[in-house]
Image (cartoon, rainbow, N blue to C red; front, top):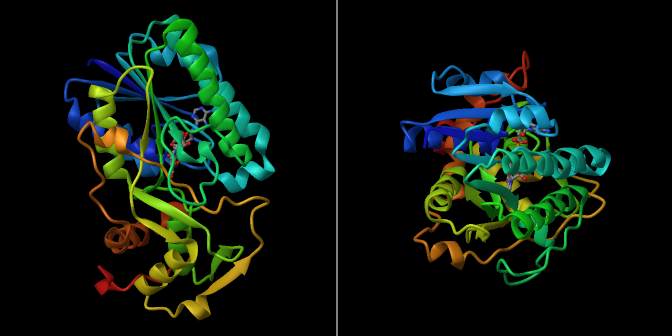
Amino acid sequence: MKKIVVTGGAGFIGSHIVEMLLERYPQAQVTILDKMTYATNIRSILHLASNPRVQLIVGDICEMYTSQKAVKDADLVIHAAAESHVDNSFGNSLEFTRSNTLGTHTLIEACRVLKVPRIIHVSTDEVYGEIISGSVNEDAPLKPTNPYSASKAAAEMVVQGYLQSFNLPVVILRANNIFGIRQYPEKIIPRFMTQLMKGEKLTLHGSGKNTRHYLSAHDLMKAMILLIEKGKIGECYNIGTVEEYQNIEMAHMICGLFGLPPKDHIIFVDDRPFNDARYAVDWSKISALGWKPQSSVRTELPKMAQWYADHFDLYNTGLPMRRPLANAA
Ligand SMILES: NC(=O)c1ccc[n+]([C@@H]2O[C@H](COP(=O)([O-])OP(=O)(O)OC[C@H]3O[C@@H](n4cnc5c(N)ncnc54)[C@H](O)[C@@H]3O)[C@@H](O)[C@H]2O)c1
């Protein structure tokens, strides 16, 4: 592969994708197309933006000219750009439909016109809606419950239409919650860590009993390589893990990293207008290709806390900081 395009390549998952591509495909040039929203920061991706094999196009996937310019002559497009924070989608839902649905449509139309031979569309397990018990496979109906997941499900509908009408060469992945470094501290793990670093209390939605599965960005990248190299065009793959915690359990684990008693450092705040109790996917389809998750969030938390402490001023310029325990790792 000579040219690979990653939309949202400056964001959390996108930056891990770019790192993985540079290592896995040493001959390839990687183009990042990213609007550089609040969720990213040029300082957090300097190691990528300054790499001679990387081209950074600051632009919006909703603009056809920009999307076409980026994907021209690409051998592979990995589409990870999105507005990604559910909480924001309750207040500014139109921006989610614009970037996630219209943006996906614009990008895949650019790919169709310019005959891109392979596309990976990054979707989410949230498109299935809440799964109270058990897990769902890729044939389950999409039942989104909030403006974010609705915009992602709508994007998938457009992709499905292009698959049938134009044989769009696309593979779709639907992943659990991902954890790792460089995630903007609005998502639960980095938010809890940076709240404690700033001397604030952890804010837990509702009862804190909602559960989430946590899959590492590194395990996701191994799944991504498999889908790039062996994923069947037109198919959708769930990417999941067995590691599942209530939000309150996550809060307790993170207090433990700082040696702080949870009862004095957690406050309960109003819940989201709707908050899925649980998401759970059956990932036997990708495991048949030889993939399984290997990292554990519980084991990785101390290293992540050290990273957020070492990079505290990326997100909190000028504030004093409480550090996690050095021996938490
Ligand atoms: N984080 C998770 O736990 C998770 C889980 C499953 C799926 N996903 C999906 O993975 C993808 C990446 O999520 P993330 O967590 O890295 O999000 P993120 O918010 O960290 O990164 C998204 C990136 O997309 C860019 N972007 C937003 N709108 C854009 C637009 N209109 N044009 C160009 N760039 C734009 C942002 O600037 C940002 O760099 C999303 O599609 C998300 O739905 C995320």
